[in-house]
Length: 571
Image 1 (cartoon, rainbow, N blue to C red):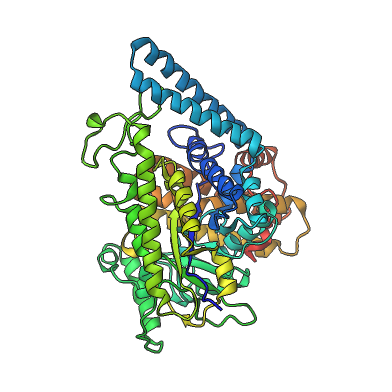
Image 2: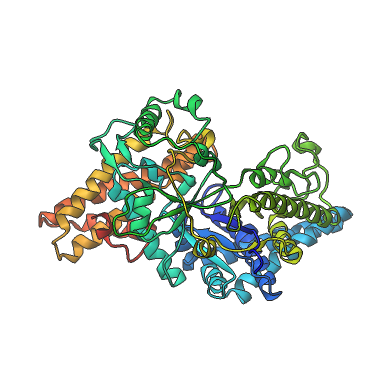
């Protein structure tokens, strides 16, 4: 019997923070519309084309609960249709101007944009019936791909103060996934790929949360029957390369030292391990099934993400940063990574197809050669896991969806590698070894610096206090059958989950949309504080004023995410 072929899967992490009802442009719902028009719908079109050809893409795609809730909203549907029509109108205006002025090279590109957005609108309306989550669900139901989840609002799990908060993020994620995709998820993308083992933990900023032993994330995942997750390569190696960042914030250094002290007590294990196999994460799971970890392949990550050598930086591809005023379409190519925006040359569609083909060939060969080397050493077929943020493909890299489609098609026809989802691989070839890992993420320096630093520590002061308040109020209400109390606590839970989104710290630290992120965090915190006071009054049996009910209703209308949320997830 021939040995099974080596395996491969793209892992696409698909996430945006909650932006409905919270601004449009430059920060807000336009993020959601752009990502849908440039990433999610083009990728769906690519996956369905492959599926119709008899080539199941076997992508492992994470769709975060907070994103799914937005994509399923009628507000989003109406907004996306309006946005696509605006893009079409902008292309028509450019076509008229370029025709009248004889700019025929620009005219050709304006026609391209009109055709592009018309096809996207027709796909959304006719092919997917205005329901992006349902379109992904259909592909999963037919065995073409696997949908995994994420924490409910992308909370940064290792730094949350209470395991009850982590449990709430996970329980709500599973509940939302069942609602939209019809079954519980097998796997999860940990927000920011951030992991924490079990050890004596203390909050890295001053808080009233007591120190003490905290379970490893794998234990909490297992309790929700989440069978696998993903980490960056450095965690398999032991988490090198973080010292320079630890020195820049004492709270981070204290966390690392506590974690290292706990790991020093474990038996020494010098075995060399490959990132081409999943592993059980060692822990005492009790009656729960163990959880496995897959590891990102560094070589395939480099050829896509590298600013100097990555495929998206090819001179012939569309330049993301240069848009034509006032209509906003892009007409220029990368030209050179060192070229100023003023020196960018016109984009030529005729030059692109061969570059996509060459880049896809190179990637497939890289995968095949890497797996062939591992296959000689392993009894079971190795798997190469290639995780990326979905928004790279189409938004930042316009040609990205076509490149993924080409990679999957080439890999299928060349026949050296089987394409399989992470869940299928785990079922067919379960691990035979358990490991321990250090704390870390795929952020700068491999630790928590991006999310906890001098610019963001104030957010954690508020978060830790709000975690305590939430659990205290839920505990007091656990035997209450008062429906008003439940309604108030439901919205309180929504605000806490939205406040916990890791996006706010990321945007603050990277200055990507700092003012917006700071305002959004403060808004959810202030709403939480005011609603918590209403909850206290309701639990005491005091009368709630009409103004307080009006405020609650206004916040419910603004943040209607997770309509069936159960405050009991914080128990």
